[in-house]
Image (cartoon, rainbow, N blue to C red):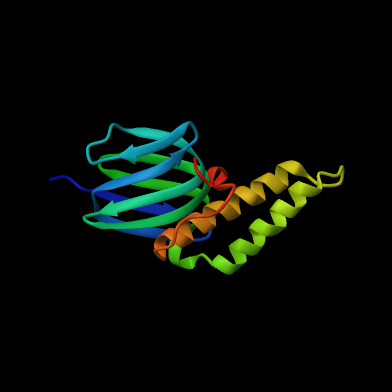
Length: 149
């Protein structure tokens, strides 16, 4: 049976590389994309969200923040603006970032850049979701939908 080779690269490093993968799920710009072996060639923009790599009964998650995905010849290449493996995520730091972003949004003053605050909140929620899932805990709290793509 055919399998996938997966590579996730940022401008700084190779974040993830794995062969013999059964399925990849990425946060596409227009929705979630599921990629199986023998997938049609594809190039797509990526959104902020969780990337899942499934190999047998094992599943690994990465937090992806923009970029591109290319699929061809059972190879999945992700060129991400930013990407983090679940085990690299500092949950305490992500929780603090979430709290800061929510506080900025609640202030709603003219000097608060709402777009930047919303983006910071979304990034922190994704990090919390990916980090907590890998550690066997449930994802985030009241604004969980912001982390889902």
